[in-house]
Amino acid sequence: MSPLKRLHKCILLLFIALILGISTASAFEVSPANPTVGDTITISGTSSADSVKANVEFTKTVPVKGGEYKYRINDVEIPKGSNTFMVKAEGVEDLNVRVKILFWITKSAEYVSSSGVARVSQSNVPSGTYDIQIDGPAATGTSSVDLTITASQNIDVENGVFKGEYNTISIPPGQFKVTVAGETKTITLRSPGSSSGGSGSSGGGGGSTPDSSDNNVDVEELSTKRVFSNTPVEFRFSNPEVPIKSINLTSAITVMNVPVRIEVLKDTSVMVKKEPNGNVYKHINIWVGNAGFAIPENIKSAKVIFQVENNWIEDNNIEPKSVVLMHYEEDADQWTRLPTDMISKNDQYTLYQANVTHFSPFAIAGEAKQTTNTDNQTDSNQTNTTAENGQQDSSETPANSRQGLNAEWILIGGVVAGLVAMTAWKMKKNRQ
Image (cartoon, rainbow, N blue to C red; front, side, top):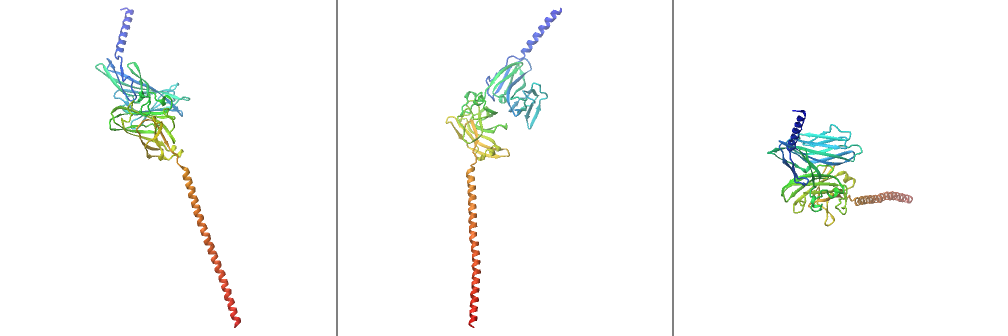
């Protein structure tokens, strides 16, 4: 066989191998096609291989504060089987990935490029649900850091078909990518209740909520739970910058995934027309469930547990028992004070509990102590005390004066009596 024929044969074999390699995984599908945060997506397709590798990837831009960046994800579900979790940070001096199992375990980047790119990767993570925090020092002069998070897993193929699931609870609203065997699809993930347009009484939020669109969100946190009718469920929030620590919800209906998102605002919500009364500690949005869920017919009861820094209470001279959770009623254009109780206190925070019936715009506020009456009362007490003391002094002075006068008159009386006696004695003697 001539060298030219051998070359043609090699090219043909290579071409066939490429075709076979490409055909091992055909086009795949992601459903639902337009998921909402907290939905579980299904990745399915066909392949002639024993397994396929699926990647779910999203990018989050995190602001830099005090030269540091921090991003926290709660309730991250790691599936069983072969998997890899990778974080890439751009614009940093270092990268730390912390995972909480029973206690926090930290893995730091082994190398940071001269362009400020760092990576941390971990394979074969034990299956389970974890809280993850990503943080570190940002590069000098950087105002934000881009974090790209990729979760990979191998999906088994049975009878030429594969099917895997991924819970979107840990993905922020926006776009994320799903890649299977080299083919990538971009999926748009909606915020809870995105179709409701952000109604104050419905509990919905925008795909980009009104305040996030207006760049009025300082920090946010998401918790998703399965809700069963007439069964209390606790949604917990662990970010120290989020004052809402938990929401205890009893629903009248059963819903497999109910996302609850807390937005801590930089200023008054753009959905609010006027400020609440009192000293405001924080303005907050609470979005509960997808569109149509958070209505009075579906919510049997709800309690919000929140904390307030003791330093804020002391610095603003706030009466601790006056702190209250307030809800903005859009239809009436007014703030309503919700039943709020102080339940505990430690060295750093005071914990409160409030009963709620509606969601979205809230404010935590308190009233300053009434010091004027106290001061007047103090002055009055001091005046009364002084007056009493004055009366005592004046009552004692006449007594002393009387005692002095009495002694004087006794002395004079004694002298007079002596003179009279002496005179009488002389007169008697002269008669003799």
